[in-house]
Length: 419
Ligand SMILES: Cc1ncc(COP(=O)(O)O)c(C=O)c1O
Image (cartoon, rainbow, N blue to C red; front, side):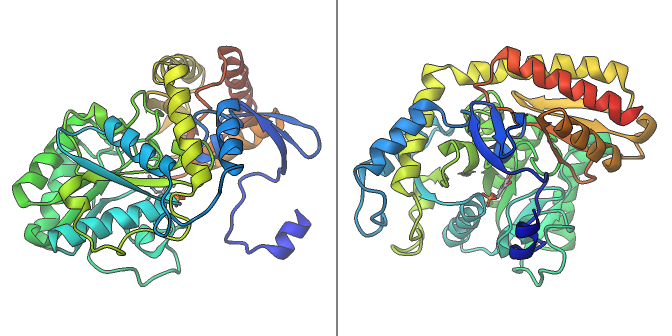
């Protein structure tokens, strides 16, 4: 840690003072030999677990063939096959195209570029509490100042924020929709808005779920004004919420979808998938990147898709979600500090309040629970606009026994942190 502190900037945060030595499935061992159960999944990247044998094998095989050409210079088959397979999995009764980048923020930037190029409009509406990455445009779209935006401005212009539905904190779906309409009155005419971007479940923001009726109303609003709807599925995608994409549960299709994180099981890959005519609007050369769609990452992503099919991980996501919810509700019975257990599929969280008072989010207790859990060998992640949410992103491949062991440790950590 001393060497890390001396060599690395403070802005590069680190949740725990632990150095990993090796990992397997949903377990990690640190350099001192201590074992941890991984409920963080490298922040939503490991739905298929650490070092899934099928993914390791696919990457090794690819490594023996070639590992970089730059797709825009010399093409390779795994990239095209992956695009075809993702298109087939993306909702919407229309022709689609897909292409690849390296990070979630890059995918978000590219979705906005495409929306602007195809609508010839500039403005973008995002939501309070949303998180879309750490690049300048990603930060501008992100709806949380500290620590993500503080000191980094000025941001790209023409980004506006509306309210995300969050009944627990007093924002109904009707309130949220009204706040979008207010933007059209107060800040920007609808005819200048290129896109509305939202996370189907806010990730960093606190695992708040956008109800299908909210997405449907946004779809109707977008259709009325010629605005494109972008689903940022960087955290929700790749099976976390019980369907491959969370927006499959909306009943309406977005025009553009961004993916990253678990889609390639830990290898850096992101995607933009969308309506073919929209995707074709930027000029040749306007999209891409040197490393974008790296062959090793494409091979890993194809293996992730195979693993999902072979191991029925979407079913697992749902059963795991039910199991997590049941056990966390039981914990909430014993701990009034837990005022909400919520989620979609296996994207599940608890929210903590001082004395159970909804006016007093408790980030300190949240930190204490995470610290107590770490001591006991469980890696947890917090999140939320108020830092008072504990989110569970355990690999979908984890056994029931391991899941229960982790949940028991969480219970013990809560007990220790509240007594
Ligand atoms: C919804 C969402 N969008 C975008 C991003 C940014 O992804 P990356 O960190 O890969 O740039 C994240 C990362 O957490 C995310 O959760």
